[in-house]
Image 1 (cartoon, helix red, strand yellow):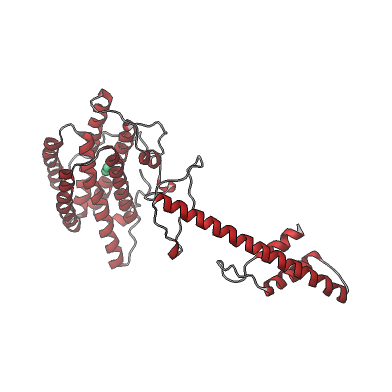
Image 2 (image 1 turned 90 degrees about the vertical axis):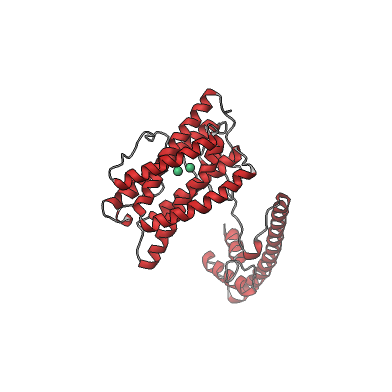
Length: 341
Ligand SMILES: [Fe+2]
Ligand SMILES: [Fe+2]
């Protein structure tokens, strides 16, 4: 026990947390402390001799331990770097930034850098999918009609190619949360006021939609003209939604609410085709299994089911946000549904 304590005290680096410099003063301090704790009582002369021997022994032991520790660390560092080089990853030790070792619950290495285990969740698939916000005023009716009209060219272009349709629409669906979150963020900075959690809630939605896209793109590989279309649609949609959010956030949120109702419909049709065998029910991509904590043998059907549940949550969040503002209140006055998936 005393020996362990001595070794720990002697080996403790002096000063900064990253310093590996062991000094004789540190050894001396440690020895003095050890002597006090151990309650060693010697006559002056014999104590000096004994302590001097201890100090020499401790210094030698400390030096040997420090050398072996440094060698061990160097070895680990080198093997880590070699491993990363083999994997083709960028070594970012120059800035002192290194990713901590993260594992799954079963102990296997966490393979994703784009999201961490604490970003994952089990989707609430019991959510009511049939909920619909009945248009109550002219603004609601106008937006509802606009979304229905926008669906016509989408149906004509994609028809029943639901994988492709989902992938393309997710590139659009991830825009409103980012625009809304960004504008609320800027408003918070300008007015020196809290957002009530709405910045985070909208950015969470954008990130969740982007994960839908990252998943769908594993299943459907976009063709060159589809990528070109994404560029054009994003350019137009981002600017239109930005202007709409600046002019009327309540209409912007209502628009997203209706868009999500359409997304639920599209994913329901997707599931019908998966059930009928018109679309092959392939195994779920690894990214989806980790993100939604799905079983290892999950299939595309499971993935579409959890994505559809997410869309239902987005529908509720956006209709709620719109309702708050239609009632003459500001978003910050109502608690944001953070972590609501
Ligand atoms: Fe989505
Ligand atoms: Fe959505």
